[in-house]
Amino acid sequence: MMELSIARLLAEYPYAASYFEQNKLDVSGYGELTFPQYLEHFTQDELEDLAIDREKLLSDLEVFIAQMQEFLGLDAFNQVRSLTILPGHDKSGGAEGFERFTIHASEIVSIVGPTGSGKSRLLADIEWAAQNDTPTGRSILINEEIPDNKWRFSSNNKLVAQLSQNMNFVMDLTVREFLELHAQSRLREDPDAVIDRIIEEANNLAGEQFRMDTPVTSLSGGQSRALMIADTAILSSSPIVLIDEIENAGIDRKKALELLVAEDKIVLMATHDPLLALIADKRIVIKNGGVSAVIETSPEEKALLEELEKMDAVVQHARHKLRSGSLLSAADLNR
Image (cartoon, rainbow, N blue to C red; front, top):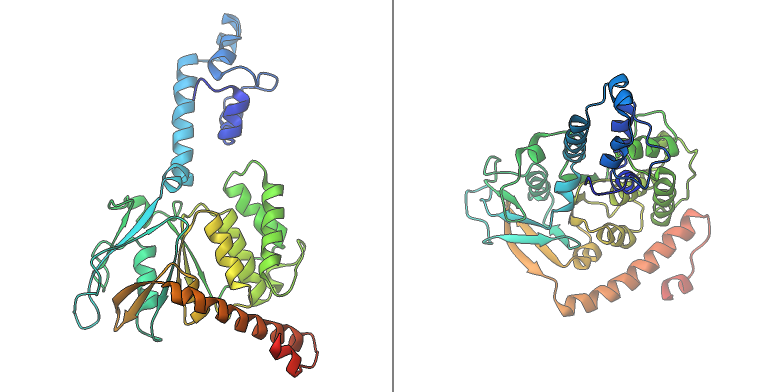
């Protein structure tokens, strides 16, 4: 770290600028120097006048950056390569139907089962990194290890981002103001570029376009979910995304999943939609509160998925025409 130029240091750790400001160190114009070299340019009189302790400033900078990395969860989250579910039991106390199940970054897993079977309970176990301390008796491992307690109990280091059908905003902010606050909290160096990309991706997902100056409280259900999916994919540091039944969310479901996977997220989604269930690499089957099976999507099912996507395209086309006030015809069903 001390071998980096100040320009490179600020590029990799933008919050280091706060450290320089707090210590009243003007590093402008010294970007090509390392921080130790910068401190060496002061004369002895200047060091005394400014009460500069070179060694302390050097060691404190390393501590400051380490604390900020921990606060933001950046180092830990960037290293999340896998999520492993260890079995517990169903509502009757019977053992679950698998030995252990590991999901890797950029994989999609669907969770299927009847209403009330326990899909949301599985999502909750993952969200709280259960350690045989929930009603199901399941345990969760991260990178094949017991997760640090900060991921379980800290509000600053969220291992999981959860997206559900019901998303309501209560803040009186525009879309831009909402995203600016999130970008600032993440100390992003290029907030405007990030915000522009989130808006672009959100409008690609939503059935209805919206603008930067739209109040978040005025967004429709589909628009708010599209915004939060794009925000989660691009800006959230959480490496695991749990999606609870978004089939009726009024968004392009396939594009939403592609966006999340492209950002190296581990994606699990509880769904009743056969299209979403088969898009996944594998699916977890829930019965009576427990996992009864883990099934890998077969080549035959992937072939059937293509037919389901064609059928879904017809339904989406019909929905769009009806929303726009147009009449349907037999030709619309034979596209």
